[in-house]
Image (cartoon, rainbow, N blue to C red):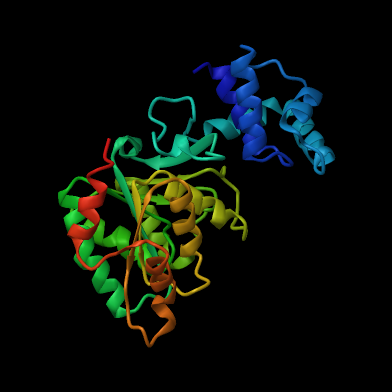
Length: 293
């Protein structure tokens, strides 16, 4: 991939007023017409379909154009891949609104592995934690890389159990890589940046925003062969990830819990809607092995 094209995509990523869909439109246009770098600001606004945030984008574009040295230094402070790079996750590329850029720290080669995501309650119970401890070691023995969102509860436990058993794990976050959110899992994120892999579609300096996390969830679901939900309430954010997985044609696994407690109501609802009731590792493996690359 040409360095000028990478610079254009990075510049678009750090500009305000343009989203990932707009960037995809620019990329599609440039590839279709073999024009990779020489877009005027007005052309970008037109091709990307920027309407409400035209002034915001225009001011941002002008700032980075005027301060090209700052832009270059900012780009040099990041490691990232684009959707055009061979190592970009195969399954993620198949989804709607797949991220144009993925910023990363750690072992980028983990993106080439078959992935399975584990998600669930932030206020995980002892039962939920024990379920993760029972299921994940078998996934590791079958060469599956565990993906989760580095949140409190089931997410962070999934990362930790994977590392404890010598497996590979990928964290997907909804902030820049220089931001650890929530603070309670910062030590896990830092360890994974050194020994595993942490990715984000947001550049450094980006803090947590409410809408970032549903966007992050689509990446978790999109790069995974399947998603296993361990404890989720009826309105849990984990159900957003599970729904995305269903929309992408991936397997969804749900672990049943106590019918008298609300902690697993979301899982029970998923099972009623067709997710696979999961009580042992083989429930996952017999489905996943059919879809492995």
